[in-house]
Image (cartoon, rainbow, N blue to C red):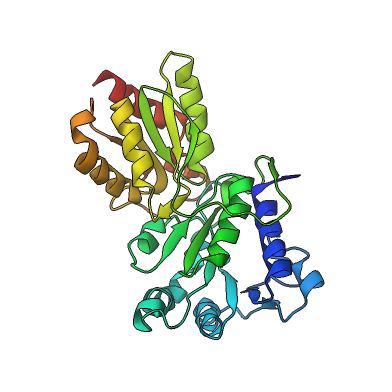
Length: 325
């Protein structure tokens, strides 16, 4: 075991994959000599060389397009997009080619392709560096979408994504890249895609979150536990496929639910989760499901950023609403 941060877990996952599987290739802007803008690929170029860890031009569509060609020819590319706000030039490649490759070829060709995307606010970055547009990819058939919130999951989900036959959008919550450490196995291990993590168990409310919202939600439910209100806290980890069974079983137990995400409210994944709960657990509900989300505006600049992202006060109000309905 090693005590790692999330970004170190990602680095260790890439190192493990490159050392174990000769078909794995890492590519992206500044991933080689510089070790990546967040140092997620630090040391890999020195260890594996520039044919395995490839510095690319600043051309997101080219990075993803080249990755499609690589996977068709038997490689397992792991492409990095520096920030989610930079992924839009590659969006056409992702929805037209990456997501449709297995369908288009009737699975004759694999689509073992991972796109790593740092996302989310809270790091005082300029415009287009703090977007949370995960719903765009969850809504695209043919893609899997995962997001770790712990160092252990960061490595295990990445290795599972690399081995998956489907393309995976691997989201990395920048806000908590280095916020805490956790023991992570040094050998190869996988966290199954499609299975949520029960962070803690309770009886009164189900709280559902992912990415950088998980530790915020954890602080909120800990505060409410001191008031005698206990919560199931679910870290989705896998946004698509979604672990519907864990969500529904929990809501049937607690009768109340709060969904927390920093993406804009309208058509965010939280709306789909509310719909799922209404369809499969409506008769168990003691109160309408609450959503605590970002606002339907671009992520604001530094002075207002903390007001945009869900915090303890807003989550607390939602918990109070479902408990007093």
